[in-house]
Image (cartoon, rainbow, N blue to C red; front, side, top):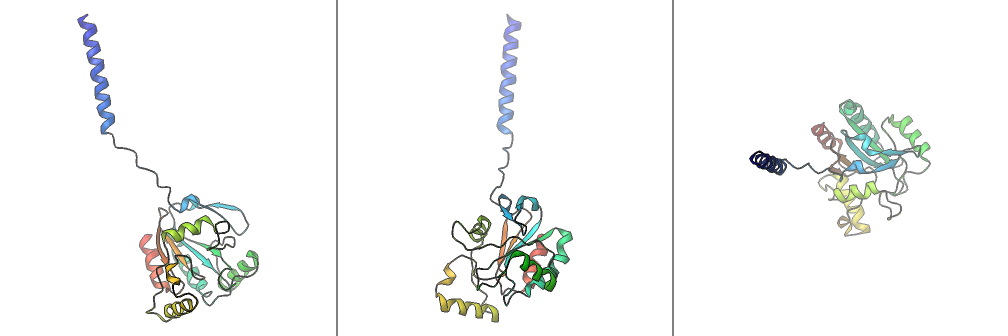
Length: 216
């Protein structure tokens, strides 16, 4: 009987130790699903692309147009792509015809302009309406705007002052709207899929390059 009682006490002790061990174990870290990897988009061939395929990359997401005064920015973007691509940098280009109807034509025609005139080699996606209504706006851009709403133009620069004046003439309260305002707005994404910074069309390439380099 003493032997049985000892075994019972020993078993109870082991169970107590096991329970204590479970209590001190560190809980599993929650998985972050609120990042760009939750989305899928259509590429220029209308095939689905999972943005999770870009995990670990620094991304620059842009809405572009081939007939805009800012279209020559394709040259700067291609230069950035060539300079940093091997370090893990990627550009995702989404043509958009919503601003001044400056991205007309099919995606094939747009791609031809970008490659022949500006030597673009970074991925170009299907045309989108970045500020469209709930049915038309891609979930990706709704999320980007939520994470990095419009914060105003840099009116200390000539381009920023011009854009601010142009939009105020249409709507004095335009800056209160978080949406994308014009072609070549850019969203910078870090290697964990988080939105780091939003750049407006008039922002120079230097601050964009500095921000990219800091994340690589």
